[in-house]
Length: 323
Image 1 (cartoon, rainbow, N blue to C red):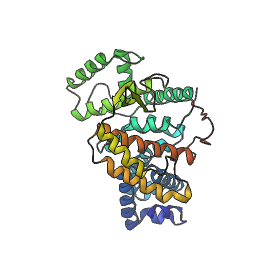
Image 2 (image 1 turned 45 degrees about the horizontal axis):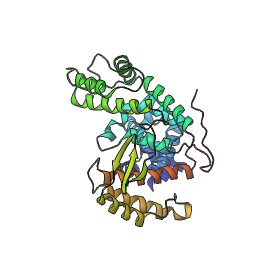
Image 3 (image 1 turned 45 degrees about the vertical axis):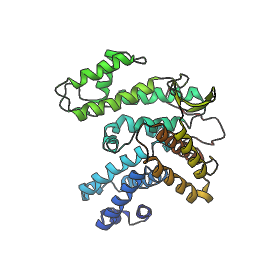
Image 4 (image 1 turned 90 degrees about the vertical axis):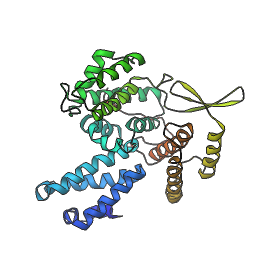
């Protein structure tokens, strides 16, 4: 793997080598397209150490340095469920808008944050994490709408809170707020879509994990002989087709446990199969959601098994979320 060359003593030479640059670009592209969080975490850690060690790279070749810096942020967003909480908070505070290029390819930042919270066993700790991430977004000074009167992430959230309140917003009021956004001449269609992504994450963070809407797990239920999934306060029926998907998942599943180091190859094969399978169903369909849930479980368990800032997975997770 080309990224392993970053461990070598000749790292400055490697970073500035054209062949290495191109092979690394291809590697990062594959990691991002596969949404491969474990490999993204490894590659990001190595790249970050190299960039910190060789800060003069920006002077030697600004083009390469800028690319590596942007690639590092992309890798962190892909690896988000496996990052520690301080890193996630810093990512949302300083680089939230930089994930929009990934969003165009289907990346869902809210879903990634949900996957991270699934690693926290104590519900009170999940709520503390939500508060910390909300605060990080409110403190974000990045420009998100350069042509509008309101320009930064933090200022837009202040406007959102001012018009809808700081508690969980009424859906009708939210819809009206979005309609008003579309009427704002200074905002492009891309601007409004980017703001929706921001507000959707922020609104989801408002919910307590104790509430039906904020509860991260998807709970299967059987009522009057019919199967349902209880998800974010909504009971969704599971039709016959989704049961067939679950049968396929059962064959792919190695038992529901995250692979240990000795079976890492098998775990990666399973994950690859699931990612290929999920593309066969339209976004938002129950079938696709079932497969995505299975993928989330694998990432969640991988994060617990590797530590991921969470310690021993068999013990309750305790984190310092800064108050």
